Image (tube, rainbow, N blue to C red; front, side):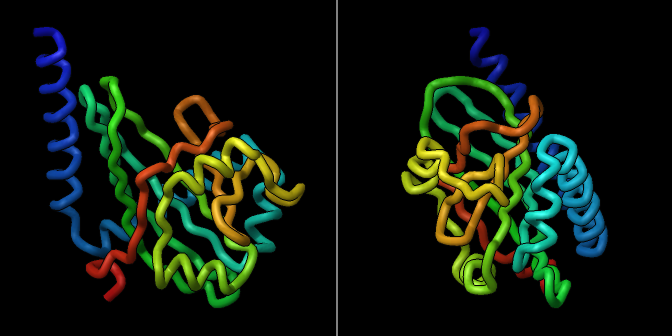
Amino acid sequence: MRYKIIASAVAVAVLAVNVAKAADSPDEKKTKIRQAASQTLQDLYKLQPSAQDAIQKSAGYAVFKNFGTNVLVVSTASGAGVATNNQTKQETFMKMISGGAGLGIGVKDFRVIFVFGTDKALEQFLNSGWSGSGQADAAAKAGQSGAAYSGAVEVAPDTYVYQITKNGLALQLTLQGTTNYKDDDLNK
């Protein structure tokens, strides 16, 4: 009985967040995404000061704010963000979704920052998206990242990820079953 009440409360919270997001105009959504990205970067720089130099010297970066739920055996997450080309300053608004299975119950608010070491890595992310799978999990366990990307996990060639949770910089990357794609409504 208790699990039904908690599951119902989580479902109502997710529905309320999605209804509130749907009411915003495209310009309002862009403004909120930019503000969230700016705050996320400031938080990252406080937690990992070397990230600021790495991001400034990179080909580009993408910042996502995500909200996830885990109800009994199903976990889902969704979010929005913006990718920025450091040379052209062009912004590309994007969405991120994930799904998986795992026993538990709860709500998770987390932020993800992708940093692209090369133009090729940035273009591949923008045009083909990125899909988190066993590859990201293995990279997180290996913990291989250059000194310039201290605190980040390399998830693909020249693509590094920082993940921030409520408790700070995550030491293990948890993006399995995650994909991102361009937000057609905001990139018109």
